[in-house]
Length: 167
Length: 276
Image (cartoon, rainbow over all chains, first blue to last red):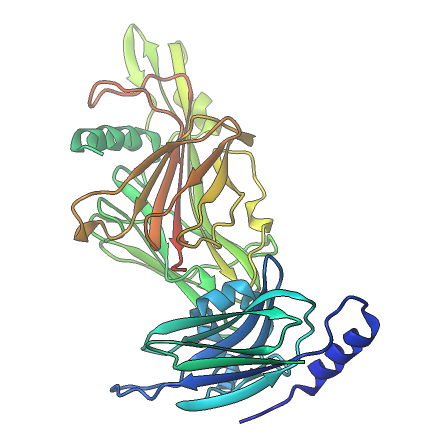
């Protein structure tokens, strides 16, 4: 699955044009595998994907949660993605246009982001929390403006996570 | 803490705390402290009790009337309150973003006087405004101690805020250096304590993790506030912690009444330390 966040893209491009010292707009291609689990009661995990600048701000790229429940009830469990909640989620409103989306089935999901990021050291973080299940977090460090591909994998709630930085 | 010390502490507490809550450990335990949810149906439920073990219901329910301060500083509402044999339970609906305070506080006066050569004690539950009416004419050697008691817990929806920490200047109060709803295992937390509105050194700070029933050691930390009234706590594990801050209590014979003529205050909060 691939989706572009057009609003963010426009912002990132605009910043690239007008902010001197800003890295050229880059694309973060992220591939997240949600493992197929054999459990009596399975619910798709809540997943947050965000970027932390070394010693700097944290920016949410995507949140997958139960967006379709009545009265926005799915937001009640966002706190269970607990590191993300503290890093960024608690400052946000939900749903957030261009950031939040429905939970995803087991399998590999490819998403692309064009966040506004300057040169520096970053960590991409993917955190998954599953109703009546566990929670896991995978971190992938990367540097800008360098491109390249990095991989990590979870052991329980997340499978392989791959990050490709393209300039 | 050795059993003997617990007994002494308990005896002190029995005198210092108004009749509604005597002895043992009093506490309020929220169902959660870090809240998300944009819907209209988000609630926190609170258990409140007085017990030996933390946080188990095995002695007395809380009998005080808890209050709610909303993140904007206005008064909120306690709903669905019920008092059982061992615990009181109530709900607070979360409709604003920010930090809520759920609390009760009281102040009382205790002391002694002499009448016709005989020493008498002030009745339990005496308050400062009734002091004149409970001391009979002709009493001499009047010695009184004001005792303040405060118990408060915090719950935050969205980002932590600080309006509810505005001190009222009575008894012991907490001023966050670290926000009480932003606690994570592996990060030390610092709090400042005020007595009657002033940062106060040498307050006794007791920190005990919940779950006492299933371990042999209390794992109690005995700390003191520093010169600026601040104390730093290192967490041993994630979970709920009982924190009790009191004015220093000099050692004395078991069962003896405290010497009147001073200021006595106690503060209790329950803090949730999240796993990283």
